[in-house]
Amino acid sequence: MTAPAFLGRVGSVAGATISVRLADSVASGIAIIGGRSYRVAQVGSFVRIPQGYHDLYGVISEVGANATPETLLDDRQRGESWMTVQLVGEMVETSFERGISQYPGINDEVHLVIEDDLQRIYGIEEEGQVVIGRLAGAESIPVKIDLDRLVTRHSAVLGSTGSGKSTTVSSLLRAICESGGTSHCASARILLLDLHGEYGDALANVAKVFRVNPSGEEAPLHVPFWALDTEALLSFLMGPLSEAAFTGILDKIQSAKLAVAEGVPGVDINALTANTPLPYSLKKLWFELIDPEYRTWANKERTEPAIDVKGDAETLTPPKYQPPGAGSATPLINNQDVLGIRRQLTQMRTRLLDRQYDFMLHPGNWEPDLGGAAAEDLPELLESWFGHERPITVLDLSGVPSGVLIHMIGGILNIAYESLFWGRALPEGGRNRPMLVVMEEAHRYLGKDSDNPARTMVQRIVKEGRKFGIGAMIVSQRPSEIDETILSQCGSLFALRLTNSADQGKVKAALPDSLGGLVDTLPVLRTGEAIIMGEAARLPVRCRINPPPKAARPNSADPEVAVAWTKPRGEQNYDRLAAAWRSQNPRWTPPKGET
Image (cartoon, rainbow, N blue to C red; front, top):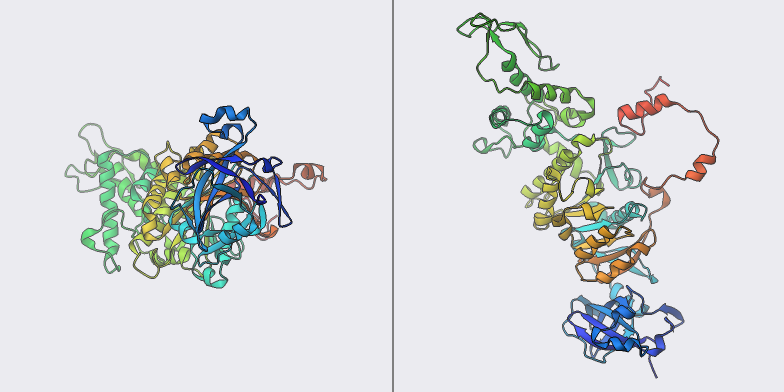
């Protein structure tokens, strides 16, 4: 008598790919086992191949005519059905392991995997396993991922707009924080770069939120300019510079940092560079650079400046000198310390006066005075981001101007990486308290054709971060636009619905388990459903992600057009609309006493 879970027999073996001749008993595509109905021979379903004392497990990647071995094409006319299976692991006694120690033989039986088998694989209680959802084909079986491998081997969450990507990320982060009760939550450390301001409310009870324009319990976002890469900062402030001008400015920055370096713990004056994260005054730097550009001399010895107004560094008021005389007549032009950067200094002054850049160029307590002294320094910045009591830090970058966004993300990642890298042996460092960096809308700043500081830092994290306790999670709706080096380093993939063929091809090329056939199911996945594969998953699996409560979901849902258009039109106040735009704050409210 044929076992009810029997599907067929192995017809050919080619490495990890086997072809299975289906038995006539499964022609209907439905099997009833233990009172439960199972859809058999479905792409993405699991099969079991008994091998004596242990079982091999595989995933169906193709069914039907194209699955027929080429040497048996005439079998199609004889009515035989075939399917292609990718071997992925084996059960040795009671423990499931990825990879296989032996291959099946020709005519070995192939069985449908039922819930009892799945329970043996997924039901094992191990430390570091996080429940994130339920098997799409067996809702009673929880899907777990390995937290160690998720963080250290990096991951990517990929899905088209409307596939449930943001909700999936929110659910994953909540599952990590809440796994194991408060013991996990107490020391988890996750940094989320939120480009659209979607996660502040969704993760409010497990995250500390930093925004350019904070409200409620949110903290102001400050990214001090002196902690950023100096070359990238000067490029933003001044634009292109000649080699001589760039070197001269670096010398002045280094001198300014030397002036405040005495007695600072960890600073070696002999090894100090312009990139050493020490505060200095941008206003003073601008004033010292602009003064020689306009200076004239009242005497031929060039010892007496022909100055009318001294100017003021604090208010960014430039000095005014008497115009140079004709020929050799006084006042004489200045020919000392001139770098020829008048245009660049004008742009620098404009940046410093532009209020939308205050979070970086005038960073609150982290802004130095003209002498280089700041109320708060690098330790307070790191503690505010990474040392608070909540497991998640959300940096809401929705208020950051697009022109500086790439530089800002590169700077933030540089601060996070360098601090955990150099402090890796300390209790606060990356090895003793690892960090997961989640990067939303990654295609906006990790393009494969763009060379920018954000891309450079992420490449460094995915290549070297594993050793120092820094993991990356790339979140994107356009994987085809992400740098190939970065995506190839993601050991785990959460692939939600993808309709674009180029994006599907990118996922197919990055599959760690060579299960290209599963990509064909990406366009028909339901919202909130994902194919999970790679290092963090026991088996490649189709999973229904556990949705968070409605009140804890990201602000990324589509507007309800029909409902909105049928409501009576309320009071319209376009002054508020203009104010929100000018302030670059969608939650702008008038100051108290104003309407």
